[in-house]
Image (cartoon, rainbow, N blue to C red; front, side):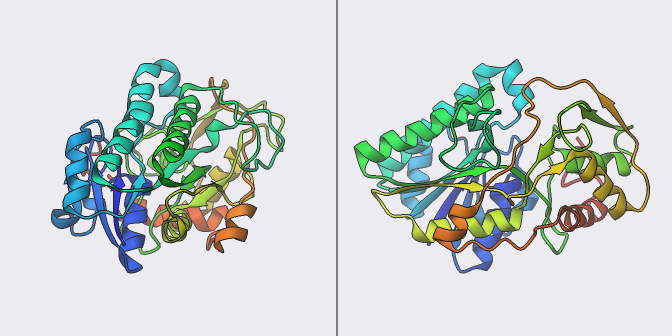
Length: 332
């Protein structure tokens, strides 16, 4: 299939693009490169179109010219603390941006969309593990804007006959198994790359937000899912979505790991202690978030390859060793 990936030069988007390319599809990235990396897209001169999702007419023209059959919508702002500090930017990018993508699809006659959603749409105090029918009571602007985008997609489906799959990510992590591609942002906020930046001397120490949660060691528990497993799920969803239908799946491993357990796994990979400090809790951080992936396993036959946090961080460390300053060699 011809598939367009908004945000396709970003961390998860580019991982899915590379996976699709290696599994018989014809993917194209559409990215404004604010956080995306040209080097993350193979054959970028042919497979990367630089553009902004807010430019709906331009996006519609791209969809028509390339005869796109499915859109995978990754482009978004995705930091919980930033969303609390600057909700306006999140509503503009995540809600109005999604509307712009849907309008471009209508204009171009594209009727299938996969949407990159999040566990942050759920309530923080729901029973764990979270299922797809767990209450959606977001407690941060990031979660609220992603839930609003889900509603937009459902409303457009009812009115205009689209077909969708919503994929609610937990913690995307890891790097390509060959070490060639991994996680690199201009303003990093994710735990595993932050730990390895400390190990590589790019940061003085890791700050752990909160050591008094009701967990085994007092730090937050999260569910980590490898990007190659996410990519496999996107392939399966793209091959099964049809106009007029809608599906929703949680994307996680079903296993929770504390921040300190992730740190210890990273120290094991590096072979030495990594400086860190436990500080106060951060606004918007729930104590525990764990997925139940049972539905996608049952309905799409998803079979994740990575189930152990030590395996996941080893792939990430391989990437960081090979690219100690990231895709951008100045490290900014």
